Image 1 (cartoon, rainbow, N blue to C red):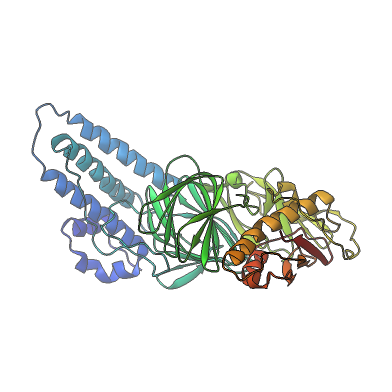
Image 2 (cartoon, rainbow, N blue to C red; image 1 turned 45 degrees about the horizontal axis):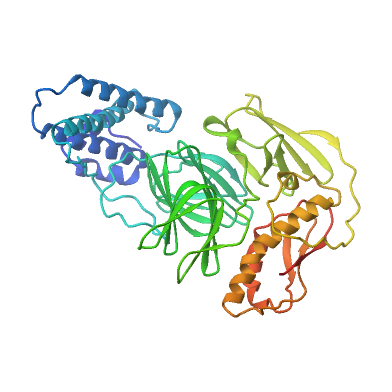
Length: 501
């Protein structure tokens, strides 16, 4: 594909002559993104030129400082990979992008010196690239912020990204841009950098889209499944759209779609919730249920996330590595960082790490990020355990947080009593809202007798075997919660009993 030269594209942007390259821009995402930046920059320059010509006490050197600072910021983004130029273009496109950003700074400084009560708004040519997913926010005004190109930090189990109808595996050289739709299968998982200080953890069985991804803000439309917003500091506004609800995360927030309700766990910080009316403020830790009909409500449930990863080993500017294939039943962990998703495919590492994998009584290690060709090597053999006898788990007292050690359990042995207690509390906490909602809707009895029984297979995957008497009306919700749980692989099947209160 022959790309227009940068100066040709800039000249067309200055004169708003998009027709000259319309066919190419429609087919080339890189050139289309460059056109948007250059067009916005040229409009801002024109707007600045139309301002009142002079103010006696205005220090014009401030413009030079603003231009230099903005150009250096854009250059830093280009060097770090947050802004990427098309491969056939080299320094010229970087200059054009920096120029467009600097134009924004010029307009800002001048307009604020001459008419401080008037906001300068640049109109971007062409409609915003959005995906027609559930919960996509409507654009009431053009967004002049530069688009932010995300990065894939971790891919596992066959996660995909779809842009303009074309699906690409996230484990490859896929780009995460505005308008992208990310889908994960039953074993899939993806961790994405969607702002410099914001990561998105897309869990198994999830579909999300990114209708808006700009510098300083991103919209996430959750169609189904579970997604975690992990924020560092105060930068990078994130708004989750699910059903009729909008949740603005000012901290770490986990959102999950369930039958007729969106379950939001504010793990830390604050969250603002609204559905067209006044916004409601919540401070974590707290669990909120957002129903299809009616008002939001808090529920008595632990605000925890047992699948949370330690993301400090990942970084958008780090080294990207592909993992050699391994047995699909393997469980992965990194010392001092906890468990990793199964079916790992690719990671972007902030620093070298050693991954440990366990499967079939074997222990393997893999060194990544040190420049060497990654290759699994056997460390030691673990004595294979006999199939675990059928046993009954202890009954929980009250739901509590799941300790990290329970997630990192090796294969080939029975659960410890501490793990039994921890997983009992976890399951009770996740099931409690199903029972309480069912009772509120008069589909479950107020007096429920017996236990919920999970059948956990040798790989730690549970299924709902039986429901306590009087709780049949909550089966769909209970099955959904069960499908999201994972137990340690023990080498044998066993039942797990949960007492309903």
